[in-house]
Amino acid sequence: MTFKKSDMQYTHYSWTAIDGDDPKITGTPDSTLFSRKEGYEVLYMINKVLKKRDLTSTTSGRKAESLIKDELPSTSRSQINVFNWLNDNW
Image (cartoon, rainbow, N blue to C red; front, side):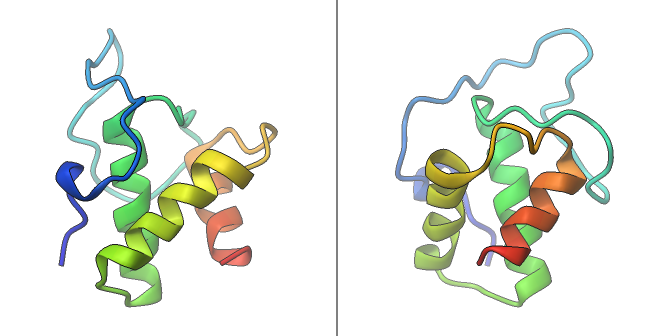
């Protein structure tokens, strides 16, 4: 199961890539800055966490989305830090 845009519970995201951003992010989370306001980045991170944890439900995806929106510390800025924080605080 891939968590999709239509599965997301919040609607405050921007879905427009700016120069230097790739809306089709692939690969492993790295030191690239993560924006919790960019829908495609949030969606990418949700799917990475679900895959790592071997989860497939929409409910699990929404839990990850809520963690990003409501609890992710502002000091977690890189993709890898966000990914690790989500897994550590699941």
